[in-house]
Length: 294
Image (spheres, rainbow, N blue to C red):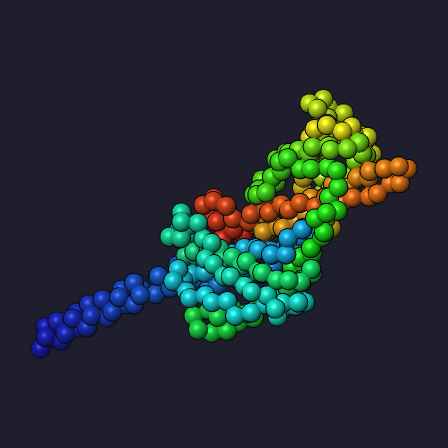
């Protein structure tokens, strides 16, 4: 009789052990996809946009870090100043090599917006998204501002080449801005309207170095070619992370005198700094978000 009881006991113990192991197998994946205790990060605090340009269309990207790679994300609307009349094109701008990258239980997606408007000034304070059928509102920590300036105010200096895209994780590289001087004039200053400070500024005229910030204001002759080479850093006045998407306007200010009358000009361009541009950036972003939550 005792042998039968022992056999039954062993059978029950084995069954319980198998059941426990099965439950552990089910639970472990759940632990993997919650390394930071959060299912999803909608990084509206990691986009800063302040452009003063001669075109009315505004476009920008933002990152979403999620435990799910197949979430359905739909754009609903923006809110802010002059947002109601905008036509918005929403896209999944995730790079192909990032779409299936899973790191520490998370995936990185990049969503993009192109906003067409007839307004000369817009300010976007937040966005409503429908994620897996549920509408959610997300405020931008720094409102996104797009201002249109008249193109004809550029005056007698023309830009020949300038950088359009850089990476936020490596912004300390030297940038090159090349201008053609169409009439005698004086360059007064060069800088960025927001988000960046200039560590160092070098200026060349027709291939010869003339100095840095101390060389401004600088008289330049018609037919000259000016190369302005700033080395930039994230602004201390507007703190950013290495993973922020930054949209800003480099500005060249100068004046031109005709028949004794001087007129001031401000040439504005655009510079986009990408928060995530490769697999290394994506992994570093996930590490940063998890560490921030811990």
